Length: 252
Image 1 (tube, helix red, strand yellow):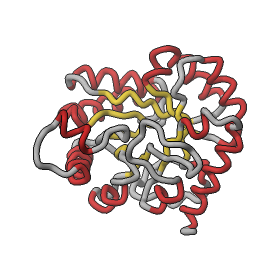
Image 2 (cartoon, helix red, strand yellow):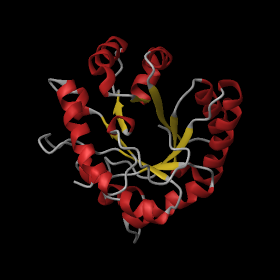
Image 3 (cartoon, one colour):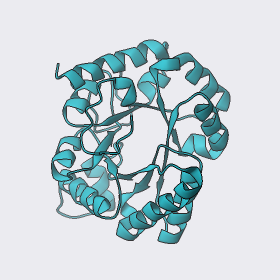
Image 4 (cartoon, one colour):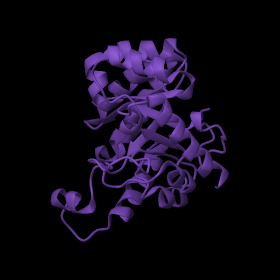
């Protein structure tokens, strides 16, 4: 499944909406985990840690196994650099990729153009996601960087609207903002990290929710890392996440 039509997806199989984050640098560990999870996981996220250590090898491995790859580098640079980087990502056959909203309208537009250029070689244009605010940040953390009288949820909406107008297909936002983003940004889909099973202890993620709650609030894709990757039994953890997602999809 891909979000060509955008907006809220109606796909019923939670495997088509679960993205497992490969936040690691050891390619052998990637091989072991992907083999272990097998058919339970169809989409994987290759982020900065893995991409800078073994990105090409990881993507080749995932593609050979028929997996879709979300390249999450949160591009944030001058527009020309973002355009060229996005073109390279498209040539790698990525399913989705990210820019940071703080790159501004010109940066997002440049990345969108770069994806179109790279797709001429790969044949497939990756979906462009705009990262609003990292889920590891709370409002107090952000106001240390951006002082002023503003509300986090409202700022996320403003950034999402800007990115959509600049060519982004969707946004990455926390479970706390996903409902408002979907209501305010018609036609955009939402990828939501910060998803935790109820029995998983708190970590450095601040704005989190359960898989079923995130789906009910409008998330189209969920990004789950440590609750699956760091579990004693990754397959069992993946099944629990998928079961919770199914409840959210069915309205249970």
